[in-house]
Length: 70
Image (cartoon, rainbow, N blue to C red; front, side):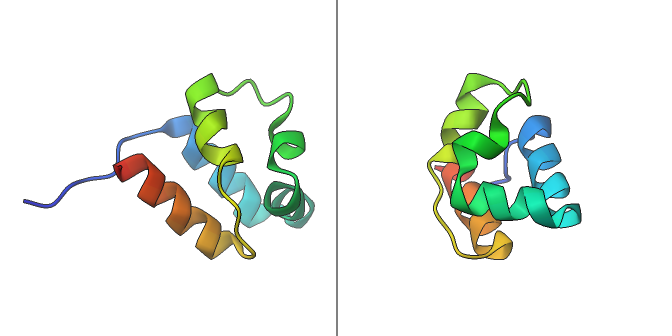
């Protein structure tokens, strides 16, 4: 049986924004707490997103997926 990634619309929206907006992506990868400030995300989602450290958006997304499936 394959485990699926939980549906987290707020996290999906952050990743979509990061893929489309270079400045937001750079802030997310270097200062995630600052990048997410004012986005009105659920606290649990912020905790997941802030806890990831990655040099690229691809790696960031992979780490987020890993955390969601844990």
